[in-house]
Image 1 (tube, rainbow, N blue to C red):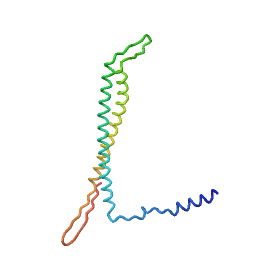
Image 2 (cartoon, rainbow, N blue to C red):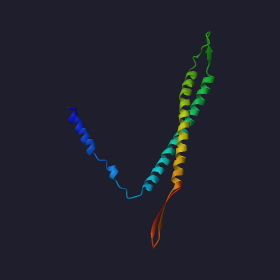
Image 3 (spheres, rainbow, N blue to C red):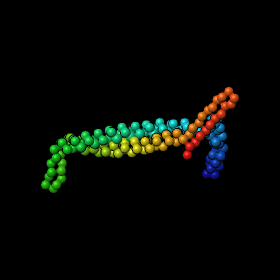
Image 4 (cartoon, helix red, strand yellow):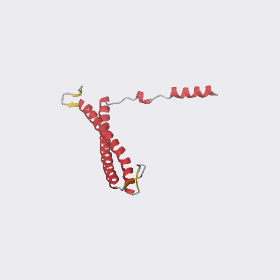
Length: 146
């Protein structure tokens, strides 16, 4: 029973031809690269903005948490343990526990987004495609700077 199923699956895999391999684009690949670079620049720009917002929110939450913890009434028992019955202290600790990872995540996202966006802007500036139309001739100039 296993052999016919295996043969059937093998036949399906072999007969399933990927049409993308045979797809011919009427435009040059440079157009595709340019479009890809523009989409990547937009995507990494969004990542950079999101990272900045997360870093700001996380930093503000951390500062608010520190203020709440420092303004809470803390008591130390005979064994050296500190505790509080003030709700502000507990809320401050939770706010710090949420704010610090959010700020770190935002900083990392912002830095990665900025670096990748600059990388693709540089790649996009290296690629130049110019059309020259004249009454006598038409020409295309493609320049890639290293």
